[in-house]
Structure formats: structure tokens, C-alpha cells
Image (cartoon, rainbow, N blue to C red; front, top):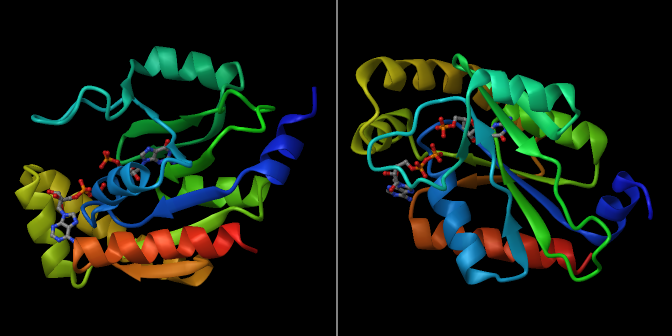
Length: 193
Ligand code: ADP
Ligand code: 5GP
């Protein structure tokens, strides 16, 4: 059996989608994997509460104890603490399966940097909103409470300059269909390299 890093590095495209909260990352990656069956969306673990109306399978929702136990076992490809909760990507299975699909990770910037350090060939797509006002509208439209909206907007102010700097591709999520087409174009281009 080949080591983990070799199989990932040689056989799979790793697409990392990052960007500020409420910009539309979750919506975009759902559409991406629906449109391209060769893409597989990794399901993250989190210790945060499920939002009202949020899908049960949006994350694996776990207790801090369970999350920490998995950290101890080296069970995450990357993990971080974001606004008071843990979030992490479980190490993908089917590592040596040549038919395994390409991987999409939808994660925040610290995790994206961890992935880039381990797999420099990972493709980082940083998604930004057309404006901070529109980002706020989307957060409120999704039902985030006031304090969460403010915390996410503050976090975005800090993260965005870094994201723009280290991104392989910068995508403005204005019209959703256009964004998804643009991202599918990026995936095609990276596959044909
Ligand atoms: P994120 O995963 O980045 O936190 P979400 O995918 O939860 O963001 O999207 C936040 C809200 O914005 C959702 O209500 C979603 O339907 C909406 N949204 C996503 N993309 C667009 C877009 N291009 N135009 C308008 N609304 C959008
Ligand atoms: P939310 O609470 O809005 O679902 O997610 C908060 C932030 O955590 C978002 O920026 C989201 O992309 C990020 N996130 C989700 N899953 C993971 C993960 O597995 N690892 C990391 N590092 N961030 C994640």
C-alpha cells in the first residue's frame, strides 16, 4: 500500500474552496458536485450546533470530546478552531482506489493553508462577495443571528486580504450560475494540466 501523501498527490485533484462566511461556498460546492460526478465533496466534522433549517448531513455534528479524541488519533487531514468551535476534515478513505473521484474541500482559510502546506499542488479557490453589504444580506437571509453576523463580518475583514494573496484563483460570487460555470471551468483546466 502506498503512503497517503503519494496516492493523493499523484492521482487526485484537490480543490479547496475557501472564503468568508455567507459568501455562498456551501451553495456553490453543492452545485459543483451535482454538475460534475467526478468530484467528491468531503463532509467535515464540527462541534457547532446545527442551524435551524440546515441539512442534517451538512456536517458530522459531534461533541468537543469526540472531536478531540479524533484529533488525538491523527484522524484529521486538517482542523481548526473557528469562532469558538472545532471544524475538521476527516482523512479521506479509499486512498489507493484509482477510480476515486477528485476531492472538494469547503473550509476556512487556516485549514486551507494547512492543506496547501501538505499538498502544494492543491488548488485554492478563494470566493469573495460582490460587496460586504451583500455578504451581510446573505448571512441575515440564511437566518444567522445578529452576533454571528457581526463576528463573521469581522472575521472576513481580517481573512480576505490573506485569501486574496494566497489564492490560486479568485472568484466573485455575484450571479450563482455564472460562479458555478466559472468554477467548473477551473476544474477542467486543472485536470488537463
Ligand atoms: P457559506 O457556505 O459561504 O457560509 P452559504 O452557501 O450558506 O454560504 O450561502 C449564504 C446564503 O447566501 C444562502 O442563503 C445562499 O442561498 C445565498 N447565496 C449563495 N450564493 C448566492 C448568490 N450568488 N446570490 C445570492 N444569494 C446567494
Ligand atoms: P459554518 O459554521 O458557516 O458552517 O462554517 C464556518 C467556517 O468553517 C466556514 O468558513 C467553513 O468553510 C469552515 N469549515 C467548514 N468545514 C471545515 C473544515 O473541515 N475545516 C476547516 N478548517 N474549516 C471548515
